[in-house]
Amino acid sequence: TYKGVIFDLDGVIVDTAKFHFLAWRKLANDLGFDFTEEQNEQLKGVSRVESLKKILEWGELELSKTEFKRQMALKNENYLSYVAKMDEDEILPGVQKVINYLIKNNIPFALGSASKNARNILKKINLLEKFDAIVDGNDVSKAKPDPEVFLIAAEKLNIKPENSIVFEDSVAGVQAANNAKMMSIGIGGQKTLGEANYVFTDFTEIDIEFIEKLLTK
Ligand code: G6P
Ligand code: MG
Image (tube, rainbow, N blue to C red):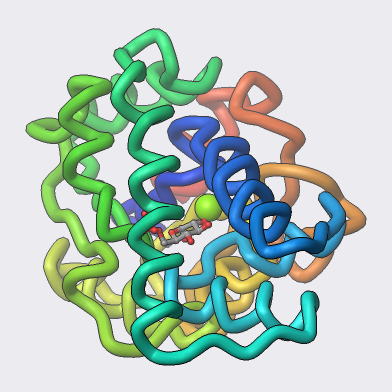
């Protein structure tokens, strides 16, 4: 039986995945190359440093340490210019309903995100205080698909990994949940997230009865 829930942030609770894409793409374009939306799937759930390494490989570019750092800072600045405009209307459809259900039924839930901006974003959408635990890019040393972020989150919720449900929109994140022996629920395309235990296009496709069954059976 399942006793708690862990949410990824970007692309699950809010559609910041599109802002990450825009900001990374601008960086690539400024450096003189481009990458596709399909390649971008490989960046989802991946830390800032690892994302830039991948992008530079695609562009067949090498940067000095200083320039690498500068580009990362520029990307984040650009990304945060989008985040600055966010408010609770940015919470993706259907998410609030699930969160309300969890609160009402005293089911603990955590955030498990690779982002160092997670707390800032949760604050902007008025969800920061609702989570029982938050594990983000500042707390982990190993990136998804390593299960570290989710294992720490489950520990903080005081539940076992095998009693945890994870919502994820990234391939790396679904793999991280699977590696942690948690129930993985993919949010996005079946083609991309086929490794997940269940896949839904978005939260509007998830019935509360489905969650209820998982948590009570
Ligand atoms: C999430 C997103 C990635 C992002 C990473 C780091 O996992 O899916 O696209 O690169 O967090 O985010 P940050 O906000 O710290 O740059
Ligand atoms: Mg994500």
